[in-house]
Length: 153
Image 1 (cartoon, rainbow, N blue to C red):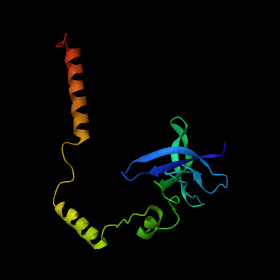
Image 2: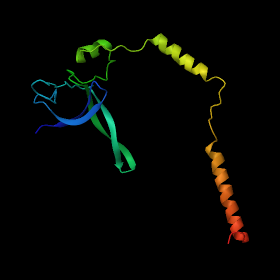
Image 3: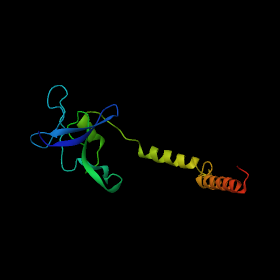
Image 4: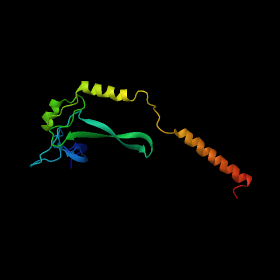
C-alpha cells in the first residue's frame, strides 16, 4: 500500500469529488484509474497543490491544521499548477476544451454600471439591530417594574 494523497477532481458538470488516492510507483502521478477506458493518472509536481485548512488543533481552539490537497480536472493529464497563471491554452492542453474568460472592457463597464445604480441609495436597509436590542431591554425593564410594583401578580 503506497502513500495516499487527497485530490479534488472537478467534473464537467461543475461537481467536485474529494477523495484519497495512492501515488504511483514512480511517485510523480496519482493513481486514480490506472488502465482501461477511464485512464486517468494526473501528474503532480512541487507547485501543484494547496495547503487547505481542515480543522482546529483543539476542537475550537488552537492553530489551524492544514492538509495538502491536489486539484485536477476530470481526465486531465496533470494537476493544476498554482505557481503560474493558467491560460486558456494550458486548459485546452489538459482537458481538450477551450474556455474563454470575460472581456476586460465589458467587465469594467458592467462594474461601473453596477456602481452607478447604487448612487444616492441608503446603505442600510431596515432597522438596525441596536434599535431592537434597546427596545427589548426597555420592555424587559418595564415588565420587571410592573412586577415589583404589584401590577402583575
